[in-house]
Length: 245
Image (cartoon, rainbow, N blue to C red; front, side, top):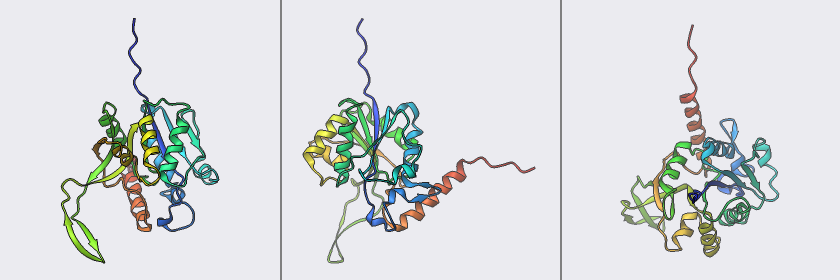
């Protein structure tokens, strides 16, 4: 009797080797505390909530990183792997992480690459991406249709107004086959800022999956206060109220 082919497994990879220079403050931004926990801790928590849907969670840090295990002391269960091979760019860190994953994963397995600084990602959004892409020939990414009027500028003045009807803001996670993404990143080099760009350069068209305005990348000093407020609101919304006597 012939056995049915095994379905591709699904892994997650979080590059966590950046220095977050635009965020200000001391040290890498992914270790800044938001609502009682390091930023990357919130990110990891969302992927842990996926349970058996994910076959492994990998985090890439710099070789000399002394902050991660302080920020996430409980990281390292059977399905969690820390890779100390962060590169000089995000693309290099992702590529190094993917290569290391091949010791456990196959080239046809899926990987969801997600920014450590998008700490407001939710399990619901992650599931929506997986549901939309796991049977797709290419893969895809969370993204948000541009809500604002878009301008191009020159010398501090408006040069033109750009049609926004087909414009999307790319988010993460971005979900692609491990082997295809390795090949695409090798060909694209360090210039690409997301995985979709590398896949696009190979002539493929990733699927756009609606994300959320709350899934923003904490980048600038003012973003921290907004992220803190959203996390506090979520906790207040999900914590059961105590009944009064």
